[in-house]
Image (cartoon, rainbow, N blue to C red; front, top):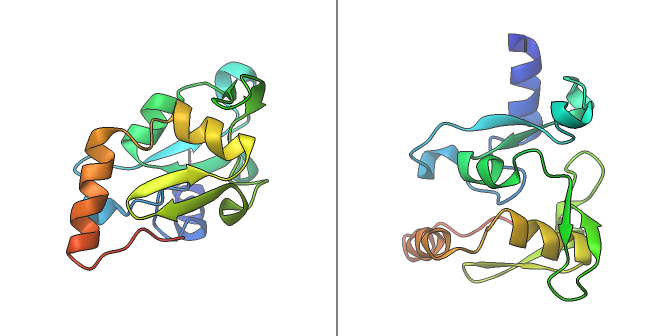
Length: 134
């Protein structure tokens, strides 16, 4: 991936994970550029298929493109930052991210966005005056 494409992905994401909205300033691992549709599923390395992701979100997402909605058990696509609006699918309740739609619920579940360590980190950030971005 060339440097110009990397800069575009970072700039477009506002320097935050496009899934959990964490800033790299509060993470101890480098952020990665995620293929929204993985190369395994023939996703191209083009701007329209790339998203900025924290290491944890990208690790849990892997090559997944869908998961089962915890509420309905239906197979549902994961959030696609290039096609979906974040605020439509997610809402913060304090340090916990809630999925507002099946896509949001599946993404929160598959990427384990609300695991105990992540909630603890976000609670600390809120106490320090940093609030989860919406």
